[in-house]
Length: 111
Image (cartoon, rainbow, N blue to C red):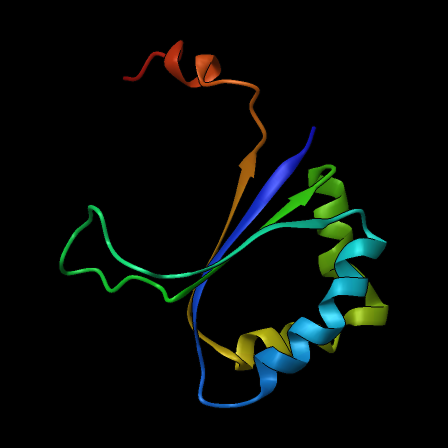
């Protein structure tokens, strides 16, 4: 089942993320990942005023959890992850399962 990796972050004051972004395209593609969306914060519609929004967003679709994990674990690209870590601040990286619609969420019972 496809999964989405949602990356929310601010850029650090260095060139590391630029290096990461140039090289990560091939690494992501090698494991079946596809960048679905890139975004820059243009405003806050709703949210907690105490929480600072991240300035950048990248959404990557992966064929499965295993393909995403293979990207993370690939020794050929081990030097990429430190570039991402050094090149960003306030990084959030969340993984979501792909849904055809919201019914699986709406039919859950919560305790």
